[in-house]
Structure formats: structure tokens, C-alpha cells
Amino acid sequence: MTSSDAPGPGALAGLRPRLPSPLCEVEDARFGSRGVRLLLKRDDLIHPELVGNKWRKLAPNLDEAAGRTVLTFGGAYSNHLRATAAAGRLLGLRTVGVVRGQELAGRPLNPSLARCAADGMRLHFVDRSAYRRKAEPETLAAVLRAADAEDAYVVPEGGSNAAAVRGCRALGGELAGHADVIAVACGTGGTLAGLAAGAGVRVLGVPVLRGGFLTQEIRALQTGAFGGPRGDWSLDDRFHFGGYARTTPELEEFAADFEDRHGVPVERVYVAKLLYALVALVEEGAFARGSTVAAVITGRPFPERNDWSGPGAGPAASSGPVRRTAPSDRLR
Ligand SMILES: Cc1ncc(COP(=O)(O)O)c(C=O)c1O
Image (cartoon, rainbow, N blue to C red):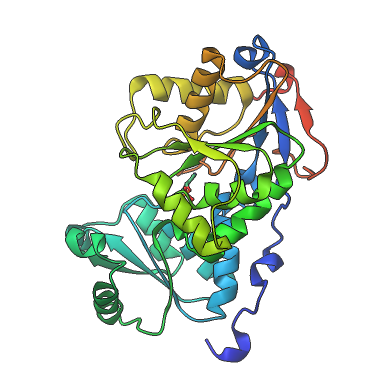
């Protein structure tokens, strides 16, 4: 690409995102019987390919990349790698994906990596020990050299850097005044770090990884993005179901049931654990009668079905006031 046809600042805006994303009330007896309203913040509807928090995190980074090759990191099923690859195709940007697991290099690509490759992303596989050390300057320099991408604009794993965190602050702004508690699933914590800074109400994070290390990391992300801690947030570490991408028959049944009740696709790695946590919390009496809880739907399942038509899914969804969906509006 020449500098004249490189995407300029705000290039993603040309892709017509649905922003602010729809905010929809769902009627769920588990909440209603406790006098609690449940809202879904449909960030999964922002863009068909740059879904949810991916849009919010990538948009400011692609502006900063200013047309340079974008290199980023992820596991073999990374939502972030797929979104970066799609952005590259849509904007005519070169992308490189550094994938965890040298052993994958000689095997057929799984559907997620195949999608990345089809979108033009150059895949570079590294061994797990180098991958773990990728934030160390020497390891990063070696990876960039080996990937033949020394001039690339580097976006960290999960897309969470200061620009991304600032990008997620708008999510808080869109929800301000609509809910008493906002809940979001956490991987790196970047989405929560920005959301909490813009929300003005309590934000509850549900980590999908084991380990309890995230509080420090979110503080560090907020300090990098805003100069210090921001907002009123806390984490509930009880709902990781064994760790990243781990599941149980109970969680799977819960997610399928939520889809049936509300016609909303439930992404299994993050969003299912968030929604499960909220149902458990409302049943524990964690939310005051008369309060409103907003759950951020940060992603969509992959591979996708295309037959969803639950709340917010219509073409004219707006940003305006909360829209109410009666149970009779349900899909299926
Ligand atoms: C669907 C979905 N929800 C939530 C998250 C967690 O975001 P974060 O890493 O900013 O905590 C991710 C990871 O990026 C994700 O793919």
C-alpha cells in the first residue's frame, strides 16, 4: 500500500458502525421476580465483522497505525485475531497474526485461523515459551524480525493497550444514566478499564480466566490510559468455570437456554460466563429491588448462525432510549 491510499484517522467510521450500540430490556423471570430489570447492551451488533469490544479497541489503534502493517497476537481461536484480520481486509491494511503454538504451523488451519488467513492475515507461529515472553523488548524484537515485520504497528494480545482502553470509555458513556450496575466479562480487563472510567456507576467484572491477577492489571491499564485509577469497579472471581475456554455441561445448558428465552446469540467463552454470573448473583440477592443491571454483550459465537432476530437485531435499531422486548417477541 502507498501512503496515499493508507486509511487515515477515523477510517473505521467509514464502515458505518452501529454506534451507540442498541440497549434493550429483556424480560427474564429470574430477575423480574426479584424486582430487578435486566438490560442487554448489544455491542455484538456494532458491526458484523468487528464485533463488540473489538470495534471499540481496534478503532483507536487503527487510527494510530496510520496505514502501517498491524501486527498482533493471539491463540488459535482468538476473537481478536479474527477481528484484526477482518479490519485489515475491510480497510486494505496489511496484518500479521503471531499465533501461540509453533506446533500448529504444520497442521491444517482451524476455522478461526482459516478465516484470518482468508482475510489476508499473514500467520506467524511461535513456541509457547517465546509467546509468554512476548512483552519483553528482546523477545518482541526477535519475533518482529522473524515475522519480517520490524516496522509494524504492534497491538498487544487481546488488543488491550492505552488507546484501546480509552476507546472503551465511550461504552461507559453510552450506558451512563441507564443502569445502576453494569456487568462485563473480562479477559485482559481492558474493556472494563475503559468502561468503568466512563460509566459513572458501579461496574462488575467477571473474569473468565483463573488466577485472581486481574485487579493489578486493570489498575495498570487505567494508569496507562488515564494517569490513575478510575471509576467504581470490582471483580467476582467465582465464575471462570475452570479457566479460559473451559466449560461444563451446566454452563452450556445455561447458554442454550438463554438463547432460547431471549433470541440472543450467547458467545460461549466470555458472555456465557457473564450471564451465568448475573443470574447467580440476582438469585443471591446481590442487586437491590428496583435496580437495573446492564450486561454488556461483548461478542458473538463463532462460527455464526445468521438467523437471530432477538432484541436489537432489527435493521433500524437505534441508540436512543431503552427498548423493551416482551417474551412474545422472542425468536423460536
Ligand atoms: C467476546 C469477548 N468478550 C469479552 C472479552 C474480554 O475483553 P478484555 O480482554 O478487554 O477483558 C473478549 C476478549 O477480548 C471477548 O472476545
